[in-house]
Length: 190
Image (cartoon, rainbow, N blue to C red; front, side):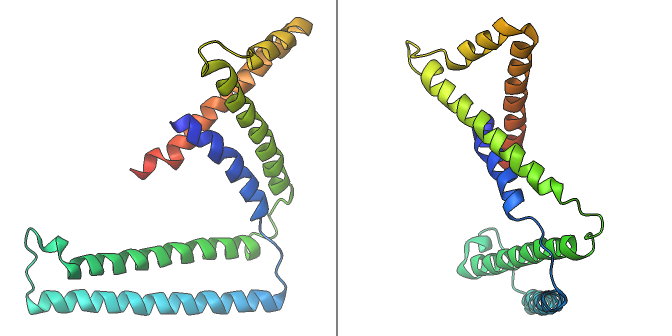
């Protein structure tokens, strides 16, 4: 399960890291972004204070929280409001990190990293597709249609023995990294 999720997410994450790389902002864009972030921060602070006042008012009125009170419409609405607030704060934190990456770390930014990410993303896409086709052609059918990767490794081993071993190591290491990536993407969420 984790390996399959990682096979899909690893190439996608690497390619999206290239697509969403930081870009240079001119001074007017920089000032506009600062104002927008400042306004969002102030708005979220006001919303947070309102939510806190509402919660304190309910406690001051002495509303009891019984065993089944979490299932009432008011409790669900309160929980949904709080989750929306949490989501907005998270999105603001992400935007602030991107803004800082564009501004504060501009001098130490390496412009080759997104291109390396794109190269690794395309390479991992090829490796993922090779694994998926191999599973579909060799592993799933009761009588294998073709020994795709097996034949490739044997062919590489015939010319220079180290190439076959190196290819097997790369493919298995990639599968291990996909399982770890899938574990972080899916397994930690529960």
